[in-house]
Image (cartoon, rainbow, N blue to C red; front, side, top):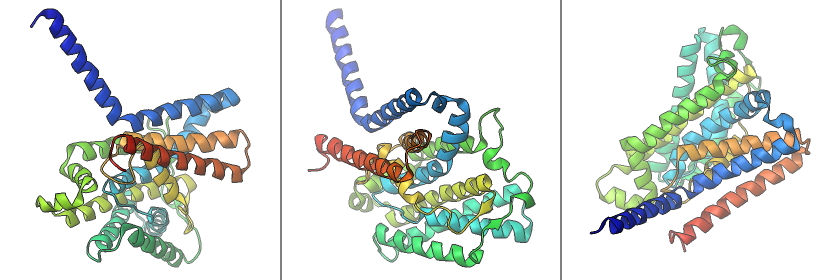
Length: 338
């Protein structure tokens, strides 16, 4: 083969690799492009939008809680499941942590650990309902959503739990600055995203997450204990819900039983906007973080434009519809759905 032919062959292979990458990462690329366009738009409309004070204290801080919840939910949605309980589970975890921190005089690190573990337990319960009782994920997590809401109200006695002043350093979990001018809450989000990405792409639980979402029946026939892995995956999602609850209580200085209501929809929207398919089998953690940032940038920008809150809801809903529609179009073109 001549040198010219080898060069041409190399260019063709390189072009094929680029095309394959673009096809595989189209959801994430589109999400990132959308984030940039939205950010530029709001900056042009209100230059103060791009100030670091607004970016760090407004956008990044508001991304933290939804972002952590969305990261955990990414694992669940990749399996083809759903978790509607993450919002009220956040409230339940927050109230339990508040009561235990007050009643047992726990320090910051113990309180954080308790919150994460209680969140994980909530996820495991969802997994057990889905695998042992064979309930559809939608029904199982709808039931636990209402149960968690009720338990949060019972445990809190319908009152907010104020505990920040009783636990030195609790407020610093979210609002402190280990890195100068960079909130700890955002740092927790990005570190959590890196850990989740490693788990999803480099570990057994990650491989089985994709396998179950792509073809659960085939995965089961290959000898994989699908039920056990589903319980572990929902439990992993719950750990991130627990961390989100800790960060939220740190920001607010209290644990209210109504915390987290509606957060599940925002978290799921962030996952879908980030390119994860509701049909399962595909998704990335980085895409989810981008999706959460899009949601935060959108809400923050609309507030700076002083748009009425009801219209903010309408626009957010339109964005979610467009994201799901775009995912369906992409999968039809790829021949994944008819």
